[in-house]
Amino acid sequence: MMDYQSILNDIHAHVISEKDKGTVASYIPELALIDINNFGLHLRTKNGEEYGVGDCNKPFSIQSISKVLALALAASKKGSTILNRLGVEPSGHPFNQLALLEIENGIPRNPFINSGAIVVADIIVSLFNDPKVEFLNYVRNLTGDDNIHYNLNIAKSEKETGFRNYAAANLLKSFGNLENPVEEVLDYYFMQCALEMTCQQITKSFHLFANKGKCLFEKSQLSEQQAKRINAIMLTCGFYDEAGEFAFEVGLPGKSGVGGGIVALLPDHYVITTWSPGLNKKGNSKLGMLALEQFTTKTQLSIF
Ligand code: GLN
Image (tube, rainbow, N blue to C red; front, side, top):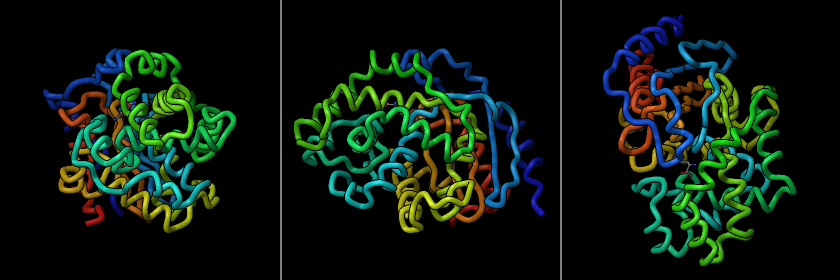
């Protein structure tokens, strides 16, 4: 039997002593207020054992981690038709890059760069009368926890400063790849990114990707094929222009957010979430990547 708790404790002790914790994101002004010294780590095995350390029960801004849950919601309603409007190739560029979108005629490379996530947001806006409420309920149901909320200050802060996302949405609109008005789609998208969750809640919500599409309550949310495919997109695109490095160091499908969270999973085995707000130059949590590299090295539990 693996002693997961002492493995997590060792990783925690090691990473919090690191001097260089990266830099907290400041392009969304409200995110810059977060204390860089937060560090949380939470693991849940497929059969329900849970282990946590540090700030694993403090809510934080999940940001781009929400893109995976939004894709799952859209795919569960629309199936593979969404691939008419999106690709599944890594972009090799930062999450907010615009040049490829122009060159490739408004078809985003994948659903996890911002332009792709804005197309998924557009699909969700078209599907529901109240997309913000529907998305929140979807995540609450996956987690079995009604104590999950949007942070309205963070949504407002990004709405006031999200110039590159406005540019991406306008480009998508000009190519005919946005059904709804730019303002309406971004209003939803910024709120989706401003969802706050703890490491523990994120771990639970991602159980469906480690469990062939079935959520914590064994309800089928995605087909096995859809779960497999979303894991593949996480592996190849979840860390933008650092996806190769994450596969190389950690070896798991996963997704980062500029709030400093990273969730990663080994299908049929476990989901693990880290939170450390300091980011590296590619916008991924610096200590989070280090912690996950140590986890798969110590446990030898990666997909490779
Ligand atoms: N809301 C952020 C943005 O659109 C999400 C980016 C991220 O977490 N990488 O810029």
